[in-house]
Amino acid sequence: MKSLICILLLLETFMSAVQQQVNGGLNENEISQQLRSEYRRQNPPQTDAVRANTSTDSQQNCHLYFPDIYAALRELTATVTKQKANIRALETRLSDAEQVAEQQTVLLEELNMKYNEISSLTQSEVEELRKENRDRRIAFSAGLMQSTSGNLGPFNTDITLTYRNVFTNIGDAYNSITGIFTAPLKGAYMFRISVYGSASQSIPSTVSIFKNGQQVVIAHSHQAVNVVNSSNGVVLLLEVGDVVFICETWVATCTAINIPLSKSDHPALRKSLNENVINGGAIPGFHQLQDMYLGAVYEREKEELKTLLAGKPLAVIFDETPDVEGRCVLNILLAPLQKDHSGRILVYLADTVFLEQCKHSTVSVAVVRCLQEYSINNEDVIVFDTDNAAYMKKAFTEALQSLFPNSLHITCMAHIMNLIGNAFRKPFVELNIFMLSFSQMFFNAGSRKRRYLCFMTNKLPRKKAVMPPNPCATRCNWFSAVQYHAEHFGLYKEFIEMEIEACSRSAPHSVERLHEMLQDPDLAQSLNVQINIMADKCKHFLSLLNVFQSRRPVTTKIFTYLEDLQVVFAANKELKYEACAEYFEGFDLLHTTKTQMLCTVGHQVHVTWAAGH
Image 1 (cartoon, rainbow, N blue to C red):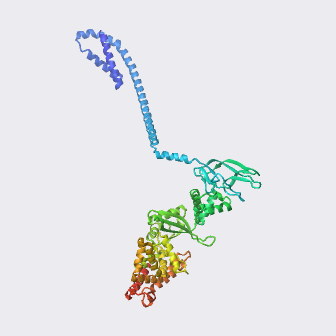
Image 2 (cartoon, rainbow, N blue to C red):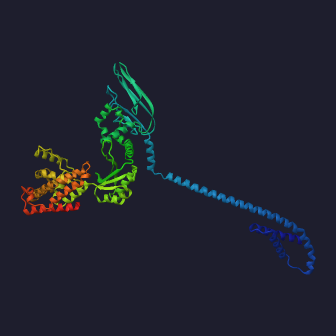
């Protein structure tokens, strides 16, 4: 019985040890110690008599069972160790499975994002894609006659037939004005033609299909009686824009001689091309020339200009001007400083740039970008030629001068002279108002212009009637306008009175202002005298402006011209009444008014010359 209890205790202890071995792991000695301590707890100390009686049985039982228990423990320990290894392997596999799951989660998220992107296409984008697919459909059908009956021909020479009665024209590849089909897409195209007409003993009926000026197929019929009827067809492999060569040649010719491409649609020119130019009928209309061929011609001309300018010393000329919409337009011209085969130095327009703001930074950036596009070496730029505006000079001093070390800055002498002229005319306020009002009177007034020309023709029958120059402050026309008004001022009062009667109460402010000025006798005489003085004193100045604006080289004569101008200014700094009496003949003005007028002119001559220096 005691032996059985001992075995049960040992088994309980063993199970506890195994559990600890699994959890934390115990070695064999630790298990033995734990068994002994458990055995002492279950068997407290006994008396000597009892201990003596039981010692023999205990020793015998322990010797019987402990060796077998230790063997079982070793086997279980080995099993536990193996299980721990299996657990570690399972943990590794679990970790790998978790990583694979994370990768699949990331992939799933990416797929969801792509799905959301595809799903987020707006209706407009879908419609745009559908439109692109529709645009790829090309087809047309057309007939020669607008009506169901009629005759065409016979012709002594080959002509391009124009099928004006268009039934369908999907893709707008067929031009009903020129009779030309131009392939918008690369692909295979099928064409079929038919000819039907009255029979003739001597005249056959023939129609052909041409590709880029080369005959491809013919539909021909010839018989003496009844009618002729024939047809033919062909499938052609066409590149985008076939019939290109003759069209690009035409565009290059028109642009070289300044013929607008829109003139290609003129009936007289179209007839001449069809009858006198080989394959002239293949030239399409204006819009197709502009959209399909103008860009290619521009790029080719640009490459040729690059070759022409390469390695040559250059003068770069640039100037800003407003266009009809008020935008700032910068024109950049390049001039090789070497004569061509004809002995001339030619100037080429390299680029036209639209600027949002016209200042030294935007101008310098545009010029540098243009020179880079033409592959111009910085060392080859010798001269920058501009007007005398402050931002132009600043563009050179703060940017261009450091980038182009061999360059010099030359300002336009005509612009300098114009600035001097502007300073000279500023004090004559009433004269400026009169000239500006006279110009504004004809703005958007075609009927008034016609009445004015008829009026001048009747008053001056021996002289061709012309409109007065526009006294623009940024041009040299102000002085030309003064001379024009000096010749015609005596006729203005009558014409303005006629305009007041013609317009009644709807006369524009410019006409009313002129009427008020001319109705005042003193003011009208003062204006007439001022115009006469200015017209006489600006003759030398105007001739000098014309010299500087001409295309003749005047660099070697600039100092001579300026010295002559200095002499003229010096002679007019002090105007004596006796020497200027001719200006006042026939006018009833006070002597003080005359003197004051001459003093103003003389003073302004002095101030202007000082400003010019």
